[in-house]
Image (cartoon, helix red, strand yellow):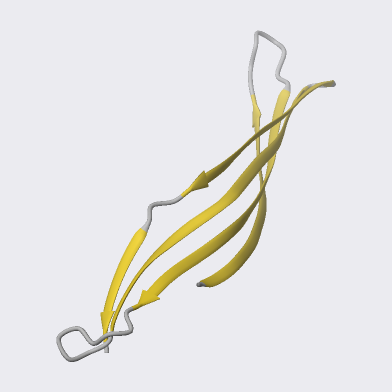
Length: 114
């Protein structure tokens, strides 16, 4: 049996902003909008490889059969902030979304002959 533990994490962020002057009657305010977002994700995986090697020769060679499976958990979150300024008024909206899964992957069979 062979096993491999694999852990990874990623992170990223970005910002965007826009400004525009609008006309409402005699009132001409500036509108400023900005959005900031960040992503964080991580995965913890265990790869297991079970192999059996036959002791007696098969077709003049040594036959081995095995199966590999991946088991683990991955999670990700996105956080964001939206800010809008119109004249002297400001509004801010913050939000977060996250999800995770713990699962078993497909099994991968393997046959070798030496």
